[in-house]
Length: 401
Image: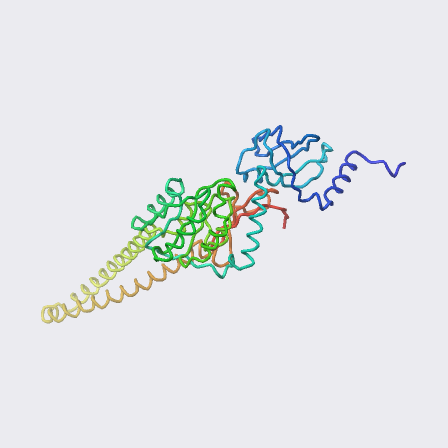
């Protein structure tokens, strides 16, 4: 009898270990009706799923809840993805939810994964296929809806970075029947007539149904086949479409796409002007120093031999002038060399150069830089910036060094 006696904590822990080791409960999809849904100030969501005969307690932590594209309401029928385990303190089992989708979206997710696997096997998403973006494009082609916020954001950011940039808009439908065909035709039109140096293809965020035109095989193949480099700007941080994988560059938002496509001309001009001012200041300071030194040498020579000063005035003046000219030419060469060295040092100090050497910067959602494992928790989303873009990841475990 003693062998079968457990404390409450021991039995709850034992039952939890059984559920955690059950492979069929690690990744389940459960259809049910939402009730008692509540989102707390912490960002965590608690609710129950029910059908005609039973209920199931559910929790969705903040990191996962922030990625939801809709606000669940009591009475909604949804598909919940997650794992079943025991909450030891209360002795209840519940679904730890990773994702919620309205009923009917599940079929789209299946189609998405199937097409993604097919195109990936064909090599359409391969890194070696991707083209480099032009450093200073003269013309940017925009393929999006003419009435959405996306086109306004792209135009505003592009004009701010380079007032002389040429923008060509090809208006298309970005959702609904026929949208995929219009987007594909627009890409082909730009390529056929070679109208732009780079293309931005995208729209604002939305549900999976609203973004589906950018998951259509016709659209994805047109993006992959484009000779003109393409930036995919579909949705927001958490939205990934198949066009994102096929494009030469993926932007999290239309505004970011404009920043990637259009060179910051104003910034370059300010940098050059600053370097020019520094160079002029260095040359002027050195000129004044040498002029003062030359005056001292001239005065010293006059005091020692005043008669020669008047006898050889013309010869001395010409010689002094030639000496000054030669000296200033030497100073100019030295300043030019110093300018080149300073420019190289500025380039070495650039954060982009550091990233290009293999380093990266990891930030939390509030843009704070992560410098310690104590700053992160399980389930939080992190954004890691590397030399050629950003990586969005979710913390699965935290290990102290």
